[in-house]
Image (cartoon, rainbow over all chains, first blue to last red):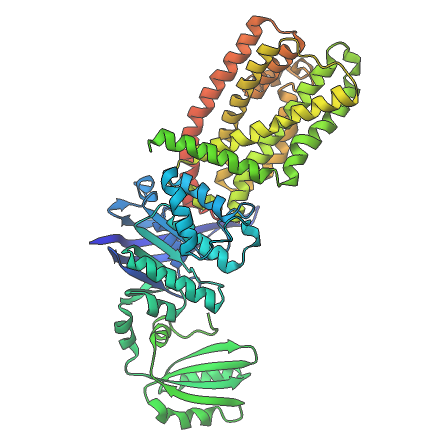
Length: 326
Length: 263
């Protein structure tokens, strides 16, 4: 059974520019998105910044009305039956906003419990349980303004779970967290999935989607470009190998020359201060290394390694060449 | 939990949470304590020729300016602040109707704004050693209770506009003094041009000012007092009914225009 059904969802934002000669500008955030999430499934929406992930989640959580298309949560329409949907879903949006900083974690949860009509007798037990679950026990009486980003993110999770919803929307929950905080939060997501909750997770971290999600939809420029299990998505690049080349201050024209080579499928670049890591997807495996090095002659080059493609490489192939690590 | 019981609980928790947040906000203290004191001192000097009951008139009038500023700025800002900190989306996406949340917030803001009357009283009675005697205390208390209800209901209408867009806040400052003047907080509306009178009659703060000033100074007939009370009740019911439609409209508009999460 499908808990979430999305059919040809579209959302256009309209902005006005100018005061005297006002011009209307339209931005298509979500163009044509369709997918289903099964009961108890952890489904990933994977895409770069600006791909339409958050807009999709905001429509599904009844915060935005779609320009076209339709969607249902537990069979209820997100526009016509928004009120009926709200009590059964929980959501978090990445970042630190969305909490009352001048209140303690405990008071934040108590307030949201009342907003979600949780019986006081239930919330008295549920709040300590959630604080324990997200690792905030012992700090619950402190004001949120003194919390680290990770603590705020974990409080967001507790807030979203205060009414024990069956369906959860997690929009980039680990964004901006340090590696330890992100790992702990992923464990919380795994635990939630073990409780058979239906979860829609958006992320632009491939390894996160690979590690957590049963199925993934790759979204780019407001459209779903691929949808399958992580292992099947990897087959998109089964004909390819990846050569990783460490460079220092590589010029854009050299990158363009690399991309133009007939045995190169894609080149993505990860920036690390002075250093860049090139991920060159090629059909020729390690045999491509001598030709690549010939083209990079005169450039400062460090480590060169050939490896098997990952989900990230499949993602790069699906959404096209991109520069930058995010 | 029955829906009504759940809503009553939400109003109570919202009331408590709002008060706790407000009392850590320096602007709130300024709007409901410092500003009414400044107005009281100025009004004492300006109305000293009035004689007799002018001190009690000043206490009530400057206290009402605090009530209005509290409602206009603190309730208005609270919606803007919810948007700013990202909690407005959480409130709208919860199963509790937004009106219930706003009701709890307004209740807290209006009740705490009564402090402005206490502050004005303190300045006039203790610092200036003037006689501040309420002529009809029981009728005054009843009028004050109706005033609180009327202001809360008036605040429902205002809050709905603040939900539409953060740009609405631009008009907030412009509303403060016209209401002081149109509602006769410190000066009778007879001093204003005749065409403004119907506008005053549409505003519950005007009827509240009539009832509070009248019962405090004893210069109101029972008929006039009953008219003021009746108008406060009538307009409060109208505001509540209108706000139901307004909230439905503005919440839908905010979801269409994507202004709920706007910073």
